[in-house]
Amino acid sequence: MTTYSVAVIPGDGIGNEVVPEAQRVLEAVARSGGFSFDWTHYDWSCERFARTGAMMPADGLAQIRDKDAIFLGAVGFPGVPDHVSLWGLLIPIRRGFHQYVNLRPVKLLAGVESPLKGREPGSIDFYVVRENNEGEYSSIGGRLYDGLDDELVMQQSIFTRRGCDRVMRYAFELAKGRKKHVTSATKSNGISHTMPYWDERFAAISTEYPGFTTDQFHIDILTAHFVRNPDWFDVIVASNLFGDILSDLGPAVVGSIGIAPGGNINPEKEYPSMFEPVHGSAPDIAGKGVANPIGQIWSGAMMLRHLGEEAAAAAIESAIEEVLARRDSLTRDLGGKAGTRELTDAIIGALPSSLARAPAA
Image (cartoon, rainbow, N blue to C red):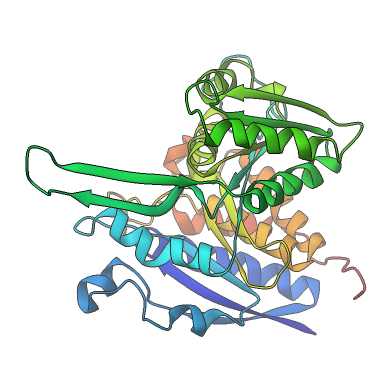
């Protein structure tokens, strides 16, 4: 029996509620699918920061380097500035483990009402592929003359050929199994160096994929098209900042950020990849047992697919869709009255009793 070693970091707020529920779902499909998990829990969080002055220990990456995957809940809590919590935990993991693809599926499912009128289930179905290691979030810059009238702040964006090419190739490879249509997010009419370079690399990588259709939009009109014409899209590739924006807007147009999953992927599997929901720590509802666990559960399905457990991943996604369509066990963000555990129980109940597992390669 295959056993997957997974680092579990519930983090902050509702992460401590939705992560254990998602683990219950993953354990259920593991029993049916003939594999198992070896979970190792870490208390890395804002609470740890308040206690020790660090989100994680200095050797944190070394502690989880040999895991098969990382299962993360949420990061952030009042009292700890967001840039402290993110740069103390999430971003070091993404960069230290070369998780250069942030992958976020966007799909309108039955039982979830889109804020866009007239949209039917399945009519919106695309992926945002966000460059996750460089771009606008490169930590190069600083301040001069703090507190004085001529105070100066500078932050540089870094775009490398390697960084652009590898995330763009990932997007095309993903589209290969879909509609063979890739859209690039840009802003080359206003950002005069990095974005024209991004456009050049997109054009170059496009030539490696004959038979594909491509387009590109400036980020401002692209956000408008997400709202007005979301059915235009299949796979969107974007820089770190633009991808961050689009991968929140995408779930919003299909009804709820609470159900949206995400993966921080090291495609070569030289390092563990990390899976987390799009939603934040939601401290306003933490501890009340009402948080929607679907984003975390669906992120678990993405983790299984990355580990090669396709049947188990598909079973979880099918169970999520079935429960959403029934609408009898939904949390309040989806218009229901169920709690976190009740919704999880419904998803476990919708799982098949057995899974056909592919033979080992």
